[in-house]
Image (cartoon, rainbow, N blue to C red; front, top):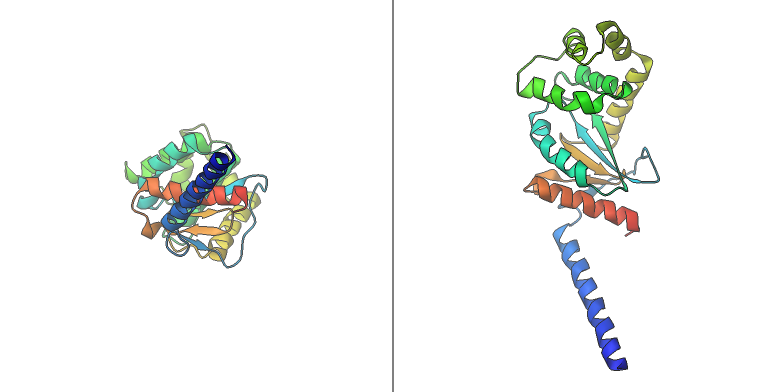
Amino acid sequence: MLRFVTALLMSLGLATAAVAAEEHARFAVDTHYKILDVPGNVSDPSKVEVREFFSYACPHCYSLEPAVDTWLESKPDFIDYVRTPVLFLRNAEPLARAYYVEETLGLTEEIHAPLFDAIHKHREPLFNEPALANFFRKYGVEPDKFNRLYSSFGVSTKVRQAEALTKEYKIPGVPNFVVNGKYLVLRENLKTPDELFEVIEYLANKEKTGG
């Protein structure tokens, strides 16, 4: 009996090691993700942060958005998902300000996807304050209120922080993802959105378990 138990434990140990080795081989540092030189702060230290760097002006971000939405519906509860608009693309700053206006108003769920659609599906040139103010009006935000928030100290501060974080993490393009301020996912080496989110969850679990 003792021999059986010992053999069983050994086989379980070998199986666990094999799974770990397979996972390690599948998701490798400097191939599927990069360890950032200087770890950054996270919004909620009680959770593992996944931060998406994006721009409403980016067609690749728009293409990925349905996969992001699907993943958000089933992501582990311990993951805190945060969006950060970048400023290094053409027309990016007005759209970054628009994102923080919708966030300030608690209207991200109502406006985020339609704003993407308006720019990339309907080809609306929403690249300046007046055009964006008119767009937000459709969602009950009067232009005067939008304009105040758009140029407010709070929104301007968030835009500066977003730009600083983008530079600190050396974000090469969008969309891109940083896990817990430590790992930059190397999207160019991932073939599908499913593989992207598998790497994100692998890194998130690694942070959760202290692995």
